[in-house]
Image (cartoon, rainbow over all chains, first blue to last red; front, top):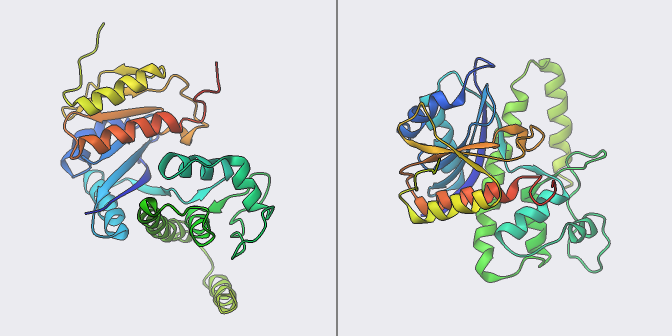
Length: 197
Length: 85
């Protein structure tokens, strides 16, 4: 079975709660395939390398494992999802092939000739723009910036993982008090736009 | 005090790699399944929200070679690695 790598970050109920208290519970709940980050009180991070038939099964089962060990934990963030140019260069160099931050900047600012598709727009702009990693990886494959046959299946697995992660992160953000009418209006606009994407 | 060796050779090598990058071994008091912790020399909350400045290593992870890879990856992903003096 293929394995999927991702990180889950949870907040613990009490801000002074020591995450080490939960290590044995996590191990017994099936998190023996995670490196557990216990660096700060009141939160816990788990970096999973999970074997599963699909990315969504890997991610959902991991979340369920953690919640069965610590029912009061609150899921805050899944990674990798939003990344800057340095992250993109690091992730691709670490896992697939050498890539400099300067090259990523060139791609992102359209300073390269002859690409089949436009580089994805930044999801968040500002002084430190952020992109969805999955969209960038898709662009790299379509435009043959990643083309080694031996790594394509690994890239696809990471894309699959980021798609699942994006759905969870979106759900986390939407789970706040939003006026229903405003949410409906926002959805209507976004849905009408997908037709000409 | 000299630390105990990790029973798995892949993980022991990854721990030595972390130590070569100035990460420090600390025993875990409260857990039977945790072999110990590795502490980042920088311990700065700005890096990954401080969540991974200290990692717990299992004695018997489900897949030792993946666990070893994860340790190396987190050492390499520290935003201060090779930057601060």
